[in-house]
Image 1 (tube, protein in one colour):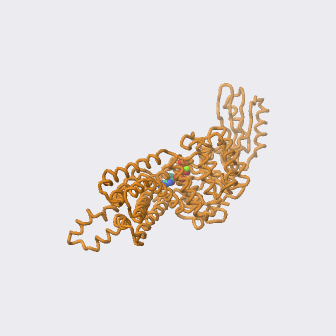
Image 2: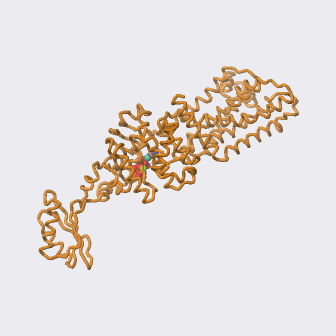
Image 3: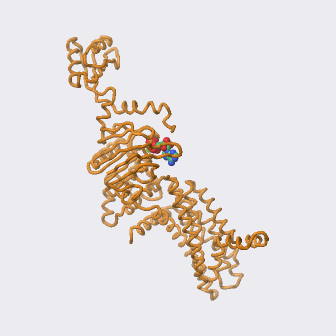
Length: 323
Length: 250
Ligand SMILES: Nc1ncnc2c1ncn2[C@@H]1O[C@H](COP(=O)(O)OP(=O)(O)OP(=O)(O)O)[C@@H](O)[C@H]1O
Ligand SMILES: [Mg+2]
């Protein structure tokens, strides 16, 4: 549905987006990650036709966004960053306005309105002026605007920003559910959201894609992915470490936490060495031989925030805001 | 209705809803009516003149009144859209930018037309007191409406330039003031007496002025040249609005 090829956007000498290519098909939810100023919003603004690209092409549902914007825009629902809305209208007037611009009228408009209102839990504020809405409700109002015409493509810039935990959960579920029939791109700084709702994630840094894969694939790039963590009672940390380091087919063992009462240790897998289950069994064997009291033992899945940091931190340290 | 007219109408309607949602619109109309009344009866010596015409006491003041009132109505057109960020919503809808520009312009123009129409008691008074030339009154109203449109188009352009309404107001007052002055007799006559300025230069500059064309409509004749002038005086700034909006996003 969305195809972005070699997309670039320069602001003066600054390359906000630099040669980005990806595609999103129907049934996919693409999570867009990256540090502040990475170029997420700029990319989304180009996809939705708000700003023209410096170079590259965008096609939405087969329509080129630059050459043939109207049919392309018709397919898209867009929630801009900071959820702008006309402050001098009521929620209902605002949604009605969006519906009319989307070509809905009469019964169809009424149905679309009640569907969107229900979806975003807006029934209590329908006749309230947008001006007086709380941040979260304004966000939901703008979100409702983006789904009013049940679009095939959704572009959501930080859709859960400013929502309370319940609403965050609702919106994630909603995105996941809608993603079964639509092509969705959403950006976020909350990494759990990626695992909760995305089929695929892209990490973008200083205008370039630095990682692209399913959440599981990304997590597997984490250093701890596949490591065995265990909590042992009543054995000195040094002994635990020495014994675990003796396992062949593991990379190394490390002490995560040395508490008087217990020891947290982690055994990292070696590429081409013992696999997940085997590594766990090897660790368990050591523990049994030495008669360790094990309180907990599990395989780490890897963590997105670790991957995120390891990919983007060196760059940010060099100055993410510089061109 | 074609899609294009429907979009323009939807946008115009939104603009009007937003306008009348606050007391500003009503306050504006009241101020407008008070000022026209004040200028007509106090400064225009409507009664003292003893003639059944609206040209001198009533219409004469309109370009000056509009100089401040029209920028006040139009200053928020695009600057507010930029300040709130709603421009990002509007321009990613399946509409063309010019539909948005025209829709917003028409809404404000319609509002000004409403304010202008509410001056009808003046017409009733003058026809009660005497036997005025109704044709001249009609063309006078037409001229006034067109001047308001020209100022409004300029304000639309200046409001696209900035997200600050005050700056947008000041800029459009300056531009509109220039359009008055360059054809206003007290300015052009001394200029004409300067020898080294050729006459055609003065004539050309004059032809850019709303005053020249406004006064010609006051005489009760609709000259196609005046209409063409006003159409371009509205069309060109609106076109520039589009160029500015495109430039902002590039
Ligand atoms: N209109 C503009 N003019 C100049 N520079 C701009 C403009 N818009 C964005 N930028 C720059 O482009 C870069 C990318 O900005 P963008 O808003 O896309 O970041 P982001 O990934 O959305 O960040 P955040 O997580 O903070 O929302 C930033 O360095 C920003 O300063
Ligand atoms: Mg952003």
